[in-house]
Amino acid sequence: MAINKNDAKKKEQRAAAREKGCAFCKSKTTPDWKMSEALRPFLTVRSRIISRMYSGVCAKHQKILAREVKHARHLAMLPFVTRG
Image 1: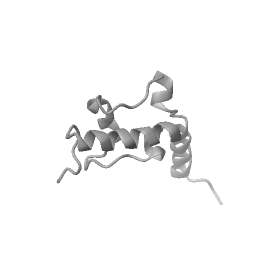
Image 2 (image 1 turned 45 degrees about the horizontal axis):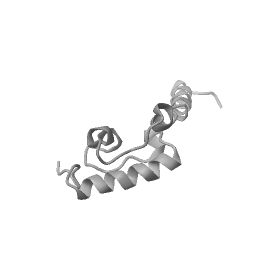
Image 3 (image 1 turned 120 degrees about the horizontal axis):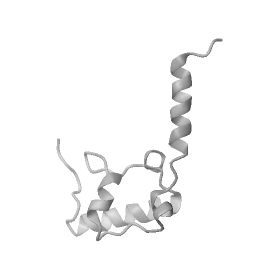
Image 4 (image 1 turned 30 degrees about the vertical axis):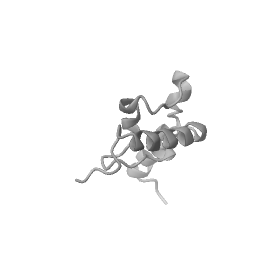
């Protein structure tokens, strides 16, 4: 079976996605509900929390991130749902 060019591209993209590393570990910070603008990149257009697989955040910081996003939502700093 011959390797298709698209297969090779997909393989490279997956490797690049794995090399991301946690943004919070690199900057030595933790997510905080007070920095609502810093939490926005981890939300989709419809205000759903992006999973670890796509955001590249480690498990420890993903748990903290989810809790802080929920806290900011309850304080009306972030929307619960954005209707499109």
